[in-house]
Amino acid sequence: MKPKVTMIAWNQNDNYVVTAVNNHLLKVWNSSTGQLLHDLVGHADEVFVLETHPFDCRIMLSAGHDGNIFIWDITKGTKTKHYFNMIEGQGHGAVFDCKFSPDGQHFACTDSHGHLLIFGFGCSRPYEKIPDQMFFHTDYRPLIRDSNNYVLDEQTQQAPHLMPPPFLVDVDGNPHPTKYQRLVPGRENCADEHLIPQLGYVATSDGEVVEQVIGQQTVDQDEPGVEPSILDGMIRQLQLEQDQRTGAEQESAPSGPQNGEGTPRRG
Image 1 (cartoon, rainbow, N blue to C red):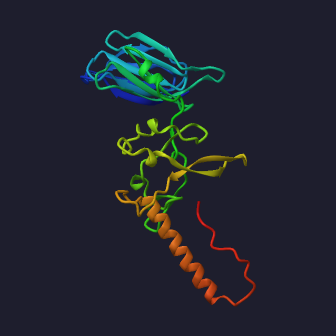
Image 2: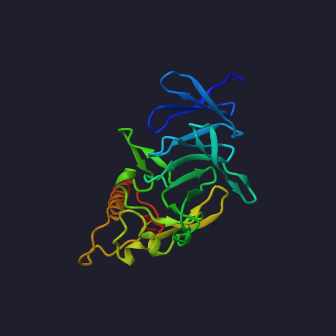
Image 3: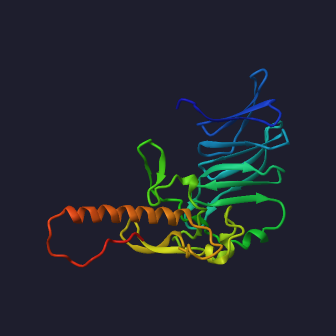
């Protein structure tokens, strides 16, 4: 096998360079002379995560597709701490990314199973107050491109960064209670009625129809003190244009039997 470097990182003071190689070794180099100082052994698969400690120049974190997370002392070439991301009933989860907190007391990792792993000192009780499954309802919505090749959300025809703040849902698309919706930036001070999402039925890839969040609940735009929803306004505009096109087509089409059905409304 031809050795290839999969990741590289300088330590906090730039005195050392750590490289991850596809033979599962980590190599510590003197950044000034290029001298190889240590081979760090422990990983059993390729490593794509190397993170230096925010202020301790001795500490480096590595994580890889083998589910292993190591904390190294790169000055001594020794292993300080080891974690293994074992998922009950599913084997291990490959670790895709890791980041230290600014104070260096915690680090967070994401894995191939959609988990956020938080390591650090102190008590875990604050984290136990939030649901195990938290996704944005827009996480897997399809995107399209407009005539200028800009990306738009397919359902609302808006640029994703201009869309209203998303709702928090579980893995099946069911919305969480309003107290959790306020955790989303932009919804901290919303009234309860603005934190209740609009639900609709969506077909999954295997043909099953499930109830999921499809957007912001519609509020009465004429109600005093209620700020108009950008999303609702755009949907109304799209519906108006569709009604106008349908009316023009009906006027130009030859007369025939009418089925009595109106223009289909968008959910």
